[in-house]
Image (cartoon, rainbow, N blue to C red):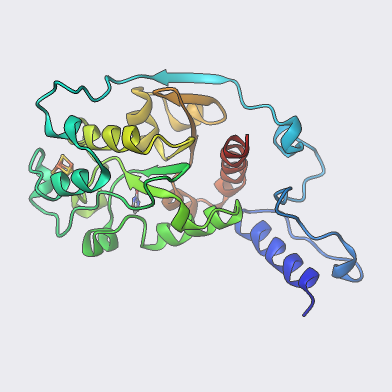
Length: 264
Ligand code: URA
Ligand code: SF4
């Protein structure tokens, strides 16, 4: 098979994954130009939207919330604030008993990825597979996340992936307010150490914890928020996409905005 055909096939698979309309190629698929790395593929859409424009013409969404929690302080005696690198955070999390979620966990799931990652993805909390392995987003939702990242040409290995709470809530219930409050300092310190170019908050729990708000996900999407000055985009949680495929299209729009912010 020619390269052009392979590219066309990969492109159509991306469209299908992200909820694009069915495409029927008339004639030879090799005659249409393949998507190039410089211009990420856009879904087939008769109505051009702002997000479909060229990278050079990219206009970010309107400004949203900005949250600036106090930064680590040299004179603090709090070991989280003093953590010098991500491995120290991992060790503190492994020994943590700050909330009731420590009682039912098998493994803590602090997050993983390179210390120089330009994108950080934040989910809600570990599920069953994550609790069993100690790794974030490795179950069904994780597989979808890996595909979403691949669709914006980001190998998962280049992204730091973590959660708001580092221990699995029993029966995958949503983390409670006091559990989030107890665990958030780990996430905040991780973000401070990572200093990524863009943060992608997946789902309401991540968005609300990172922006210190109770606003619903729908009101937070499609705005350019900031966490300690770092651009932050809100989108649906991959587990929600598995339940509601109609949200794939807006998620595709959101992650393309994140991609373009990374490319700026
Ligand atoms: N859902 C999450 O929010 N995080 C994971 O790590 C896995 C599933
Ligand atoms: Fe500690 Fe967070 Fe686990 Fe609670 S969820 S025990 S705060 S690491």
